[in-house]
Length: 143
Picture 1 (cartoon, rainbow, N blue to C red):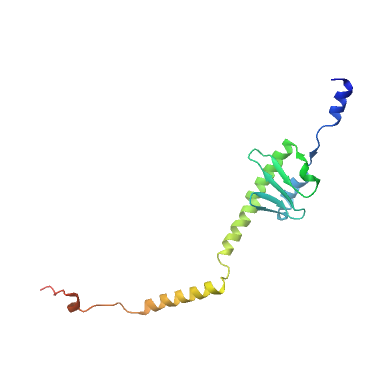
Picture 2: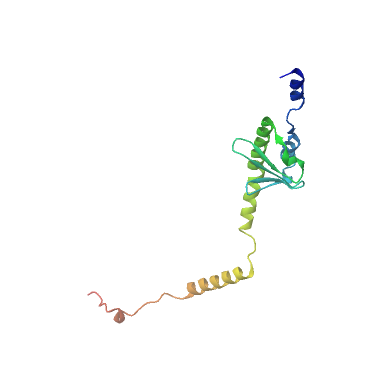
């Protein structure tokens, strides 16, 4: 390879997307993101990110961002920031939402069913125990 070819190759290194702004956004604007079906979504930009097991990042966007690769070191740093965001922001939010859903007002059919069920239980509690006469049972008292 000639010196001119080596300079040409060195001048045209692959371009890597700088994800430092996203790492900061995960830390300081966690509400701008949501996680659904394995994809991290940045709500304002609608960019989607998926992380592989080894920290590799896949970007799905409607702009030129999607065609760019992320430098390995920054990908690992972004993956660590994502895991921290998921553990300390998203997971507690999911747990709170799930817990709150247990106490949401049910629809009219469910309320009707519950009312009927509770009325039946109250009715059964008020009825006295059923006893059968000894003659019907065919048991003679012990002497």
